[in-house]
Image 1: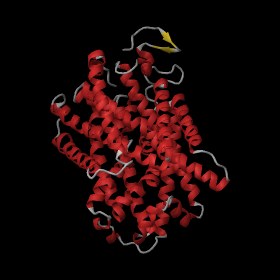
Image 2: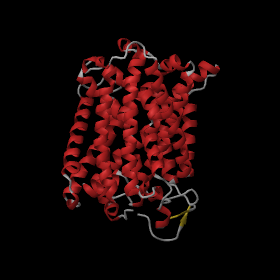
Image 3: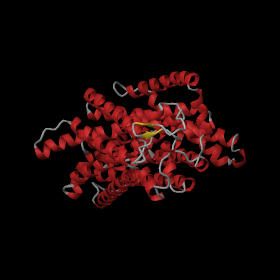
Image 4: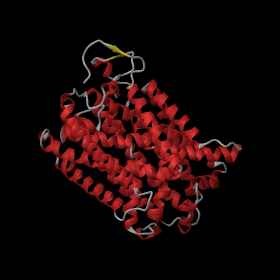
Length: 479
């Protein structure tokens, strides 16, 4: 554990002051945009909607509606925890104090499956697109890996040098990407490909009916929202966190859930219901749609996904580094990762660690499978991990408010909603497993499963060798 003295190691104080972030630097608006940019709405629409349409067809809106309901149920659990224990540890702190420190450590381990992969997932497909467009429009052959290295380099530099600068980037990027797709939706409704018939968007419009809708239609629908909980680890740097963190979570999910529903209808009618098979076959369907209504819309879409990919990766590394820092403060990982930069006041070593591992994941998966397939594999892997954490969070709410905070127990918020969320998430996870997808899209299940098994083994070892770290989170001061 970090010792409370005035020693200086590599320019960092190792005392408690050196592991405290700068309080009050983020307003409610800042945290809302942190949440929304972490969900990467432009990237979600461009990258995930084609995968959803392959499963749900013209019933895309149902898949996104069910996904929104599931995420709002999960968001309710975060709201309940955030009001009681605002902390940079996020789920790690929540589950440690509700289900025990071992469960907290396990959630932290699973969380990093998500935190390390999401920046790679959202930038690798962008890098492939950037490489293709550079060759198409500029006749320059630049390998996708160069774009990947540059993108993650910029992201890590922003995260390293301070949350204020990161917040400015996410505010601007988030506002731009949302505005672009609101305008695109309006244009597609104004110029639909055929008649607008909402009666055609029924479950039978899915190639496999409800199975496709509630299977990978919802899996990738939940992926659209992954990152909505990113406000929680920013609690120590947020003004009035007990109020602003819950508000930011619910407002951001509602805004983007509404955008996804609107874009579901706009996409289907803009392309044309009878012709959706060709939407799936088109390598860049949103470029095609945007070019039809805007002329140079393809470049606008690329600008939007560039913003989205950068902002999402930045928001993810910001939140992931703070969870890692919290675990380092408690001795569950190296205390070096808890050190805060004396000038920038950021968990600089945790940022550098996450950035390095993320780049490795992107390069290895991209060279092995290509950027598009690597995106599908990494996206599904992180979604499986995220859903496990979300389910544990809801179990934690039930336990916490029926024991520690029994005086505040509310049957709706602390029993009915969490049980419903766990049931829905469990069903979606079941649909991921049966029937087993073909190679290489069965890899996410094995990767996520192996990660969890390894985590359990490491936690069992750490429980014996670093027992103080498990107890420290239970004693940590909560803001």
